[in-house]
Image (cartoon, rainbow, N blue to C red; front, side):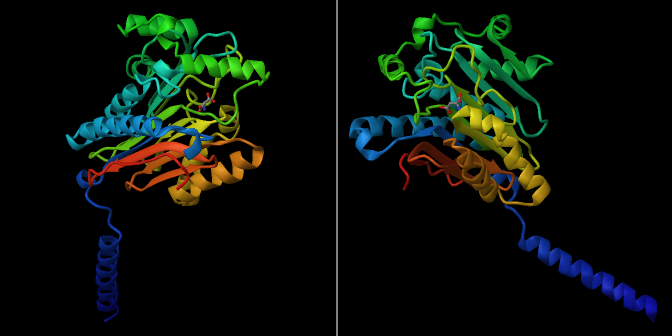
Length: 333
Ligand code: ASP
């Protein structure tokens, strides 16, 4: 009798468990994928952008989203989607990465980039590179073809040359707009130009359930040469872990390093059971904001939930999920 009762209880338990788990089921991995991108956060407001400039930003962000989406929809990896999408943004003069990189205090362009694979927790990054056309490609090669995570300066360039990457003269990174920004910052004796962050970043979830994140930047206008920000620092500007999320940040890097932004978001999810949205809000508003830092973060979790949080007036941003509809936003609304 007692045995029969226990058996009945076990069967009932199994039925309840299967009903509950089917209710909370995520969509099958192959129907649940997407990417989120950013092109920097800062004092971006309607009165500061002409209609034409706004249109140019929107068009480039959409082109980038579509490139990443095409990789994902065809069953490609989140890593490839992140890298290819960032290349589009690096090749545009609109963003502070690659071609449009800002100038350091000595009039040079020093670029940083990183990428991380949420499946293996492998990562690659380069910092302070001056002639690599697409630093995100170098970061990927560091991850794939070296036992290391972060290369800086000459060593990074020697490695990239050995990998056959395209090199350009420093003049390639000259844009009048960024040069004028440097002149303005130096005239005002600002250590860095405040409120303007044009770094680019991409996070993606592929059909195989793998997350990846990448970030690329020229850093901050008028930064002291040799200064390294959060973008190439794994755990600060970039982080991905299949157990939690993939995130990419933009803003005053010093604050994002000191609060270990990327890992802080992931750790809240992993150890505290916090949602991606809440974790990102905690870091941007409670940690970085409290210390006086400005910027934002994008993220996607293993269930395909996304977040975009910033404490600046605007942020170039967009996403494209499995429904194939690109969404692009610039201002606070
Ligand atoms: N976070 C970057 C850095 O501090 C700058 C940016 O996001 O615009 O280098």
